[in-house]
Image (cartoon, rainbow over all chains, first blue to last red; front, side, top):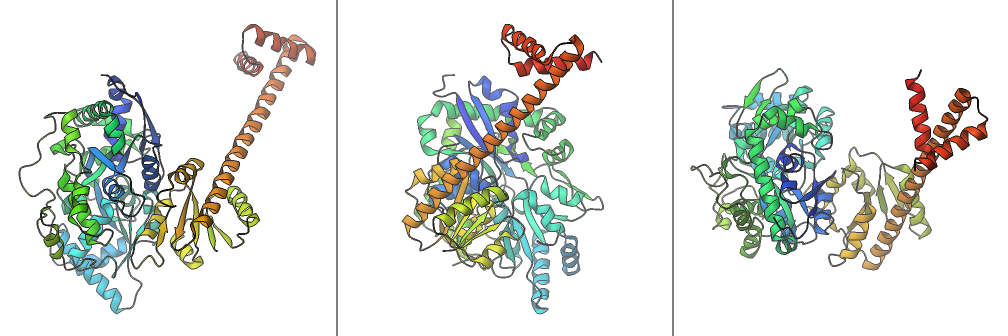
Length: 389
Length: 190
């Protein structure tokens, strides 16, 4: 347990999917690995990214696509970042206002649980509004480089809605989502826990889909650090990964009430333990009149090998950037994107310890569209009728 | 050149605005209301946007890097990529700048430097205010304890103070801490 450096500053945004990071510190797992971790709460992803890039943070709870974008120099200053540990997969949901929900229900052909059916219903609502020359619908998401943005775009485009032409997509800080929906500034949003539940509880939103219903596996948050830091402090990285792995197991095996209470602390997620418990168990109220839906895979922390960074996931995120015109497509950039998710660092720290992934399906298993193959992304992208060229 | 300051603190925004005006940047507008932030920014159509880092709405501005219909005038860069010292200094001071493409590097640098120094000045001011406030609080506590002692032990004001001071010296504590102890004890004896 020789660490080159004992104190670490790690930035985070107060969200349930940082659970392993909170538990690793608050249950003393990091300390037992010889690490003195200071967790620093931030208010925006831009701040987390900038403070990580310039070295004010040693590591961070980061939107997985930002780790890729920073390394490629897309959208901001280029800084080589690595993600040796995946903090969470899935965990988001799409929520719409009661009036949009009603309009979509009137146009729905098929099962409301089928994302393709709801996306087509949305397309009919959009066409209706266009015919009446009404204002286009507005949807909120958390960041240009986020799973939320890509999940929302993928879903609506599958139904024939062009996210850049037919609707407006706007960035909103998660704490402002519910208020914006209530006041009619947005008609729907894609966000993580607990904000979908909060909207439903207040009667201002209906959850349409969990993100896991759109994609079986989607890298959501990374533990990210500068490549140079990882290179210079291999033992610290390994110690931190061991502490996180132990924390993920604790979240899976301990009394969920204890975990929820720990996460509820004001200096961690800072919301009701009951709401966090529902998130961890994937048991969400989806309609204001009390209907619930359950999915044990709603948020994956340590289950199904979600911890081990999967370069195919990084490739998929990069493919979304290329599809929506955020980044040009090139094989060189693809390789650079895949190299951000460092399964080798994970394996070095935790040999053979990740739970095996489920046997079926491709890495992503999207509800519609072509099977994702990171060896031929050009063909994958050209299979989508709606994309930026 | 049009400059927008996005800051919910009117005092800090005023300090910054003053500095910019002194430096000859007279076209400065402040947005203190975060609702429909982007719409306001598009209406003003600034060349430079300054925002404090404690503001969660900073992520909204990141959207301006994107090319889409919602974004009318894409923003170029935070500051020059190579200039990490400037980025570090501004993040350290708690301010971030968004600059529309085509501005001269030197002009951006002068605005950013000014911003950084004004933000530092503001936090010094805050620190001083906090210190002054706690000094006033301490003096109030000491006065209250003095009053209690005068009443309980029938002492003059001067003797009461002297007793507190000698006790503090003997116990290697601050007079303020002794005063707090006296107040706590007197509440218990009520």
